[in-house]
Image (cartoon, rainbow, N blue to C red; front, side, top):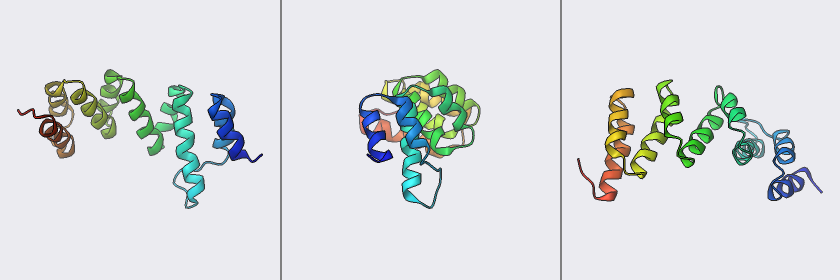
Length: 140
């Protein structure tokens, strides 16, 4: 059985430690080898499945993929306060995830206030709100 097959088997069995160990050995961020890069993204997903958010947070300091995967996980878990904290520290992706979370949960005005406070010139964050309002039939 190849390492890939063993990793898939471990993942399906929720044996996160084994899956992470196998995949991380073949993972490389921003590699020209697309397999190594895909393995890196898989590694980030496995860390989320294993609920290793502390480890993912450490990687997120220098790894854009870890940062994005962490923010998406925080959004999926409804952890708006943590996203807001990360946005306050300058993480724009965390801001965008926070805005989406707030809009998706009916707190569009809170999202707007957050953008006005943290990044009033960020047109993309404002566009997320505008698009949400347009798609949901809400208006300012």
